[in-house]
Length: 119
Ligand code: HEC
Image (cartoon, rainbow, N blue to C red):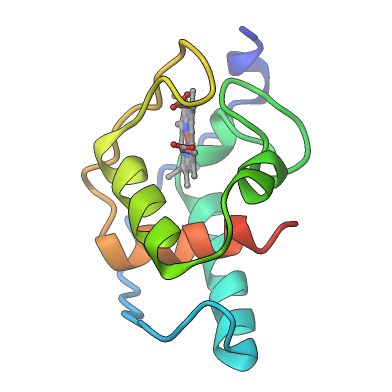
């Protein structure tokens, strides 16, 4: 559980200014696949990968496990985007997720749409 530092990817560069406030439903294929690529990029640029891997649990849950737990609905996208920004704890264990107040709501939602596409 404490294998943080070894895989910490320090990519906290510029806070992306992409504000694709695309509120269309997650299942719209074309818009969705654009979103997935954008979401992955936002995740790579942020600090997420220091605590999350796509396929394996690290400090936080694997993104595939998050995708299994939550259906890709608009409500869940809003819920999880809020947790990325405000932080969260108690859903997957004792370890809390740090808040990310610098991430714009629209960017957080784009990240979540990507995560929930990983089923
Ligand atoms: C300091 C480590 C850390 C960082 C950095 C981090 N997370 Fe997390 N994340 C966690 C932990 C721990 C949990 C589990 C929290 C819980 O049990 O409720 C979590 C949970 C989540 C969840 C599921 C929330 C839920 O309630 O089920 C999502 C989605 C998520 N993280 C996305 C992200 C994204 C996107 C980023 C980058 C912007 C990020 N995380 C950065 C540690 C981190």
